Amino acid sequence: MDGPVPELAEHAAACADRLRDADRVLLASHIDADGLTSAGIASTALERAEIPFETVFCRQLDEAAVADIAATDYDTVLFTDFGSGQLDVVAEYEAAGDFHPVIADHHQPAEGVETEHHLNPLRFGLNGASELSGAGASYVLARALEPEGRDNRDLAALAVVGAVGDMQDTNGELRGANAGIVDEGVEAGVVEEGTDLRIYGRQTRALPKLLQYATDVRIPGISNNEAGAIEFLTELDVPCRDDDGEWKRWVDLTGDERQTLASALIRRAIASGVPASRIDDLVGTTYVLSREQEGTELRDVSEFSTLLNATARYDRADVGLAVCLGERDAALDRARRLLRNHRKNLSNGLQWVKEHGVRVEDNLQWLDAGDEIRETIVGIVAGMAVGTNATRNGIPVLAFADTEEGEVKVSSRGSYVMVRDGLDLSAVMREASRSVGGDGGGHDVAAGATIPKGEVEAFIAEADRIVGEQLGDADDGDGGDD
Image: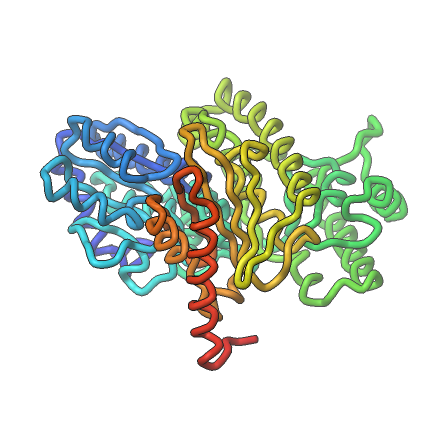
C-alpha cells in the first residue's frame, strides 16, 4: 500500500520499522497547532503499535534543547514538526551515540548533513510550506505504523487541523499531498469537505460577531462595525434570531438561508468596491470534522487550530495534547479559558503594533515588542499586521520579543509573491541568527530564530543584507510573476 503520499511511502515504512525496533521512544514536538496535532497523531500511532513512549514539547529545538534530550536515557527520539532545520545539531549527538533520531518534519533541512530516518516532503520533491505540514508528515508515518488489523485513517482529522493551522490552505483549499490526506479523512468518515462561506467562526460566533470580525475580506460598513453588521442582517429576509430573540450562528441556518446571506454579502462587497479577487475569497472550500459536536470549536478545523494555539503557547501543551487525544471535559474547558485569554492578547498585540508602527530598512521592516507581546505569539501578531496600515506592502516583516530566558525571539513573515521573487526566510533566519550566536529556521514564507540579547541591530543588518541579495538576485532574472 502506497498510503496517502506515495512519494514518502517507502521511507515512512523504514522509519516505522525503526520505531518498532525501539524498546521505548521519546516523542519531542513543537508547541504550535501543527506541532500539537503532530504529537497527537504520533502518540496515538505509537500507542496503537504498543510502543512505549514519553512526550515532551519544546518552544524551539535549539542546541540547548537537543542537549537536554540527549541527556535522557532514551535511545530513540521521534521529532515531529521540527528537527530538519536543526539536523546539523541532531546529527552531532547521533554520531556521539546519544540517541538515534527519527524525524517527521516539513521545515527546510539544514544543509550538508543527513540522517537515515528523516521523513520530510522537501526531500521527495514536495513543498513543505504548502503541500504537507508537520502533522501531515506525522500522519504518513502513522499510516506506516499501523499494526495488523488496525486503520489509522481516523487520524487524518488531526492532520487536516495541523495543515490549516499551518496556513497551508491560504490559496482557498488544501492541495498536493494534503489533498490525499483529506481524501482519506473523508473515506474514514472523520472529515467533510464542502463549499461554504470562508469566514472564521462559522460554528461558534453569533452572526453579527461573525461578520464584524470577518476582516480577511474587509467589507465597508460591516467589517469592524457591529452596528453595520446588525443593520445588514436585519434587512435580510432571513430569520437571524431564534425564538428567544438570541442571534443565531452560521451553523444554525438552513442551507437556503446561508445561500441568501452569502449572496447578499457578495452583492454588498461588489457595491462597496471590494476587488473581485478579494470577493472570490469569501466563498471556498471548507473542512469540518464529522465526529465532533456541531456548534463547537472542534467541529471547524480553523477554530480547532486556534484553540490549540491558545494552549501550548501559554505553557499548557498538556491541555492541547489532551484535546487532540479526545478528552472533552476538563481539558476542553481549560482550553476554552486559555482561548479567551489568547484572543485578548492577540487583540492587544495588534493594537500595540498599530500604535507603535514598524521601522523600515532597505529590504525589510521590523518591530521590537520587548516584553509587551508574549514571545510565543509575536509571530501570529506579525502575521495579523501584514496587510494592515501598520505595515508596508512588498517586503517581509520581522518581529522581536524578549524571552523568559533572557534572549530575543525573532519571527518573520513574507508572502508567496515574495517567495516567487526569491525570498527564503528560512535561510535568512538561520544565517543571520548564527552570525550573532543564535539559531533559527523554518519555511521560505515564514520562519523564526532565537538570538542573544543585545544583538538585535547586528541581526537586522545581516538579515537586511541577505534579503536584499535574495530579492536582488530575482530582479536580475525574469522578475518573477509580477
